[in-house]
Image (tube, rainbow over all chains, first blue to last red; front, side):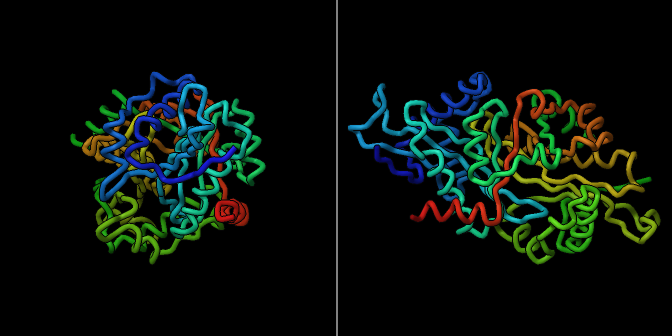
Length: 172
Length: 172
């Protein structure tokens, strides 16, 4: 099987949105997907894109059972760590089930690692679910370190009413 | 005790660097601090700052035992979540020990929440160490949810030799 990994283009918006929804479904979190193709277009293209996206594409004769040629994506942006300096964060990595085990995930991650080093970044960070054992095995094989275990980090989210109340406190 | 929370300025670089080092020492990770005042100036100011920083400042007559008036900081940047859209990430929050328990941490967080909402953001994310019980109590009180517990997320880092090897794979 052949495939290419390339930066996304406007024509990929619909496919990337489809894959975002597939990935969220895999995480049993489809109800949390509030983004839209319009929002992704507005924030991902133009003179000041808020994030980057790579897609994995197969030739038409190797398309998926339901006719898709964009079979995986990786979503990323630069961040800034007060300890390490410039780093890259991988928000999503997803490969359609029928295209797994062919190295596409590793190719997507490798391109992001290269992009990061080309821009003077020092560290590639990302998250996964602790029950996703194939992903965990791949990340360990690539040399990634689970810092929630090694350094006892916890991730917090504040949203909705709670964050509105916090912000109100700032203006009082 | 009175204090103000304000965006940092060039004159605060030395103080913020001091507090970054104090915070890393608290996390027993001073050896991981590779950033410099020069890097922070280059990446934090100018036409395209890579991050924002708020500082908490007390009047000169209430300065710390060792003479400092910048007694806390909060370091943040916008990120992009494929589910929630635009969000803000709080990289660091630190208040000097002798100024804790006075609401400075809550003020810093509240200003970031306001900043996020003002820019159309939907969620405020940050991390803490699971052994930092006073911080955990504060975050829970403010309505934050620990998603490492509720959603089983794990954070991975790849850096150094491992990330170099990944990137090499991309160019082969």
